[in-house]
Length: 433
Image (cartoon, rainbow, N blue to C red):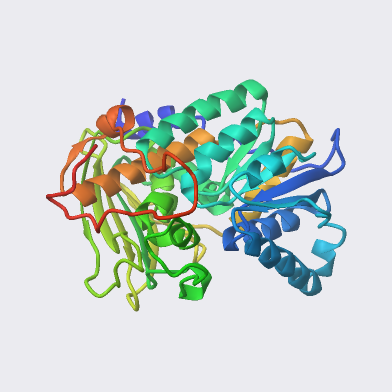
C-alpha cells in the first residue's frame, strides 16, 4: 500500500464525509433555545454566525460570563446588531432574567430550559464546563482550541465518549472542515491528483501580538499577578489560552490532521519571544514557533506560527506530492493545485464560520447526531506537543505527550486573588512534565 492509499484508508471517515445535507424538513422542533457561555468577542460573534445560519430556527434565551460587566457588553452588542440587521435579530433574543455571572454562572445557565450551548470562554475552562453541559444533556458549539494541556485533552476524550452515550451533537470551531473549497480540495488529494504525498507545510503568521479588546489591556484590575487580570487578558497567558500556537495555529494543524488522519511519531520545535514585548503585563507566551512533525516513513510537516507587531501576515496550508502541489488558504479563498493536473476551486463560497452552525442546527433539529469533539482534541493535542517542544528546546516522541505527560494548567481552586505565574519559558531550562 503506497502512502496515498494509506491516507485514503485511514481518513475515510472525515468531517467532510459526515456533514449532513442542510434541510429544515421533518423536524420535531420548530425552534431551538440557545444559551451562550462566554460573552466576549468570539462568543458574541458566534451568536451572530448562528443567527445568520438559523433563518429563524433559534432563539438566544440565556447568557453567562464570569464577569458581570460582560453581560452588559453582550446585551448592548445584541441591540446594536439588531439595528444593523433587524431581519436576522427579529424575535431572536429573549433573555429575560436569564443573565448569569460568577464562577457558577455556567451551572445556572445549564439549569435553564436550553437545547444548545455556545461555549466561547477562555480555553482553560473547556473540560470543566463541557462535562457539566454533557451531563445536563445539552448539544454544543464549542470554540477552538479544545484545551490547554495534555491532562485536559485526555479528560475531553472521556467527555466525548459520554456525549456519544447521550446522543449529543458537538460541533467545534475548526471551520476549515466546513468549507466546500477545502472539502473538494482534500477529496482531490485523496483521489491522487497530486500523486503520493511527500511533504506538508502550515503557516499562520499574524501582524499583532495581542488582539483582545482592540489590542488594549483590560484595566478592571491592573495587577498582572491576579486571577482577574489573567482571565480578562487570557490571550497572552499560556495557562488560560495554551499560547498562540495552540489557540490559533490549531486551525492549520487541524487541516494537517484531517488529511493525514494519524498522530505524528516525533516532534521537534524551536521558538521564542521578541525581546521588546513587555513582561509581565503582556503575559508569558512566546511570539514565534517553528515545529517539525515527523509522521514516519519520511513524511514531515513543517509548521510555523508568529504573532509579532508589524510583521507580514501569511496564512496557508500546503501539501506537496509527486505530481503536484495543493495550496489552501481560507482567508483569501484560495484552493488550487499546481502541477500535472492543475485545478482552481470555482464553486460556492459560504462562510465556514456560518456553515458550522448550519450543520449544528440541522443535526439537532433533524436528529442526525454529530460529535466532532475528538477531531478538535486531536488537533489541539498536536499543537500542545509543538508548544512544549519549543518551550523546552527538546524533541520527543508524540506518544509521551498523548499518554504520559502530567502537565496540568488548571488551578486547583477557582477563585479571585493572587495568581502567580511562571516566567517566560527558557528553552534548555524549561522542564517537561
